[in-house]
Length: 168
Image (cartoon, rainbow, N blue to C red; front, side, top):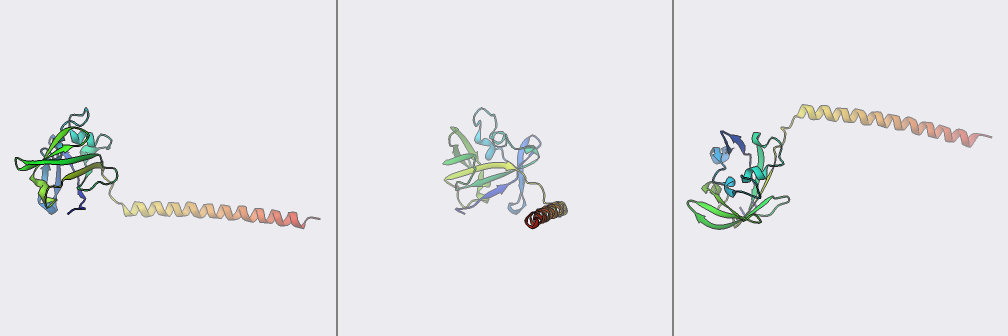
């Protein structure tokens, strides 16, 4: 999985960041000991809090992207140091903190990536097809009104030019 992009959706549950991934048999899997062990990035006490500091309603859920390859907008780069206590010890580059990612990492990657790039972003709203259709119909109606108005103005200008050209 050299070019894998792992997407999980953590949320706050019983005073901890957790996530579910039915395809991997994970339910309320704690980030504690995985991503949260990044420690104190900058002056913030928890790395997840750091990653979601600009994400609205993060505790209700957010998207966490992880990849062994750099990608646009990643926030943190982790570098593998060693395997330790059944997990993988990573250093958070530019922060000087360590992260212990648990063996759950093996559910996403065949081997522990040498580097891991992480980004948090707001969870996307559910797609509402009816709302989208109504919005598109409104836009079409407004465009049709604009086209009608421009057609009338164009006709008025043409009529004015023709009268000016035909004047003695």
